[in-house]
Image 1 (spheres, rainbow, N blue to C red):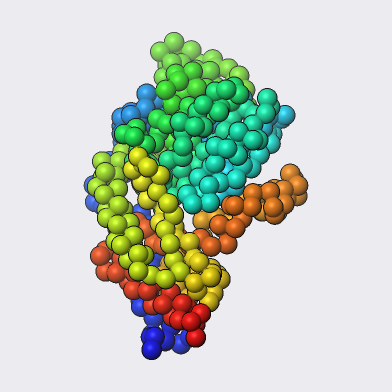
Image 2 (image 1 turned 180 degrees about the vertical axis):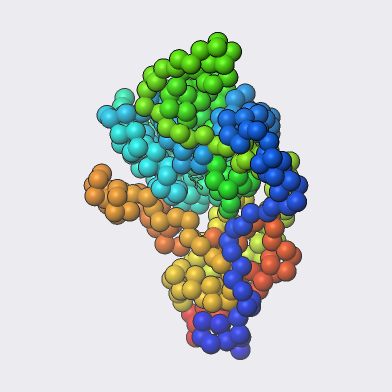
Length: 401
Ligand SMILES: *Cc1c(COP(=O)(O)O)cnc(C)c1O
């Protein structure tokens, strides 16, 4: 018969919980941070521009603007587009709330468009259905790390005079037909939270080919001050002007030094993530009741997340029971995400309700993120697969009996 599950009192696969994501930091990273701490500039210094230039080079973008978080990056993008009251911005519901919150920060209205149920990426047909003359922008989320259908989205946005934004927080290093995330939309947003591909502790970046947007975003992150301190020194003047309501969203030199050091290792980390994904995919071929999301053709996946869908017809259990069983085995599975429009903030402020995005809502009941990070050992990967096999076979057997 089947091994007794840990949740039923059996021995767990692991004694300590394997997290779903975690940073990798080495001595070179620590050295880079310490050298900034010993220098004159800990913020607004030379490391900021150096990191921005290296990041722009990595993704192949002309401009990169660093900010203090991915959330700040989304807010800065919305501000640069002039999103304000009366403007609509189309967003998918399967994302971290910050994607939609950034629209709300600016007084705009998020409009939730449903996703493709097999990829959980924004469905261009839904965008076409919901776009209006009030639509200022479309924000596409490269869920789990695969780029959306930007060719289709760009056409729709252009036809309606809307700007295309990529929330590429999952997609650093992803490619669509050889073009890297960071170059696929007009504005492209990244996060450097510790579970993402590289970390600065907290941090974010926006890439663009537009010098004008880049300039607006640099001002917005610095109180909308027209002249930065370098220019003021050059002019020997103390004067500056506040031209709008900006924020202090600056990323420090300490963080940028860490980011620059991390960036040199991202290609290797991406290879490791893809290797882990290959092992998961091979194992899933024979595990009942758990299937991966569909890969888009021509796309190189960055695997921020590895998401499976639990099939309740095949297992005698809802996703939540599979989640609890895997957690009991010591596997730190997670759910990304509760659909944003179902959070009380959106229900109360915008009147959103279940039924608004039926495909996203149905998928959200079935998804589970497996541990996925570059620092996972082969043993960690084996543990995840062993726990999935153990749990899914046991739950599938209950359906048979
Ligand atoms: C992480 C993330 C954000 C927010 O980034 P922070 O750096 O945590 O503020 C926004 N959108 C998506 C899709 C993310 O994964």
